[in-house]
Structure formats: structure tokens, C-alpha cells
Image (cartoon, rainbow, N blue to C red):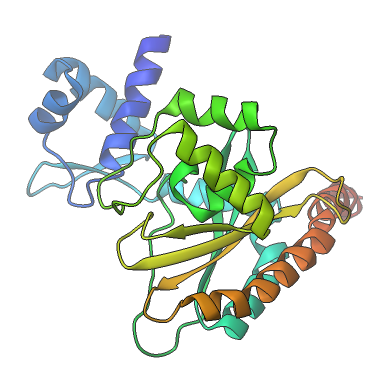
Length: 273
């Protein structure tokens, strides 16, 4: 398959990922500005590999669960969720709000784990399959604040200050605003997003390290989020120590991920002997 076809195949998967009811061949071809014949050929190739399925009644195409299975297999191989989940569950239980972990991938953050601590009243439960908008989330600002300012500005400016539909109206929109937010994040010790990721919500986040020690590289972030009706200024102040404690715990636990990866070849060799 030629490279343009690989790119188009990925575009098809990315488009279908947001369409749980699927799309017709014509609708997909129109969405991606592809000839029907080319779209059909690529869909058949993806279907043959199990990434796409066609509904026999409606003839629409939808993603299968194969990519999700591969994603979970990849996370399991890297021992990401199992190392982090126990610490995240404790944080959610102690704070009574929605908590998440994101890990650093190049110059992006990717959600890998969540825990819901709210047992009554309003529950904030955002999806995990969305991109972390760095300038408009507590998670993004927490990481950006650890970088030299010129690097943080370069990363955000390269992507622009636009936000996806559904984000709040109070998001950062200029370089000067971003500078001020990052300076405040450094002073405060954690990122804060008030009605940015979603109207009526507040999120707070801080980074954890690849191993214990202030000089260790950042591995990811841990966050707490919930409705503004519960997350008042006073409560945010009370939750900050819990957030930092969870980050310290994750920094202590994170090296276990690499250790378990090192142990797997030894176990496989013993099993084969």
C-alpha cells in the first residue's frame, strides 16, 4: 500500500472513531473528499484486517473494537494502568471527585487511567478519548509550567489557541494570557482550569516524575476535577495536599513499570526452558 493510502486509511479510522452509528460509503467519501471507489477499496482493506465492520442491514461502516483491544494490550505491555491505578483510586476516594492520569508522549499528554470518587450528587465524568488541549486544561498547564517558557509558548503557538466544541468560554486565548497562567501555576504549585475544559467545572493538576527526585524528568500528570458547586476556593486549597501526595506516590511507583518490563523476558525464558 502506498503512503497516501496509509494516510487515508488512518483518516478513515479517525473519522469513524467519532461515529458510533457508523457512516455510509457516500457519507464517508464526502467527509474525507475521496472518490467513492477509493473509499470503498480502503474500507474493504480495513474490514479484511478487522478494523472496520459493515452493518448488513444499513450497509454503514463503523469501527470494530480491534483498535481498542490493541490499545489496552499496549498499555498492559508497558504496565501503565496497573502501576498507577491503585494510587489514583486512593486519591479519588480521599477527594471524592473525578481523577485522571495522563502520560507524556513527545510533546503531548495522553489519558491512561481514571477513577470516579463522587458517590452522590453531581458527577463529572468526561471521556478519555479526547486530546489534552494543553493551554486550556489544568493538566496541560501543569506540564507546560515545568518547561522553559520559550518551549511552552512554541508548543502551544504551533497548535494554536483554538479549542474543540464544548469547551468553556474562559480558556486562554493569547500568548500574554498563557504566560500569566503559567507563572501563576509555578507560584501555586499546580495547574488550575476554571470553566475552561467545560462550563461549570473546575480542574486542578500537577506533574509526577519518572522517579523520585526534583531533577527527574516529568512522566505525566495527575488531576482532580468536578463541578464548581463543590470545588470552591476553600476546598481547592484543602485538596492541593492530596494532589501533591498522589503525585509523590506516582513518582515512587513509576520505576516499577520499567522493572516489570525487564522481568518479562526473564519469565518468558524460564517458561520456554
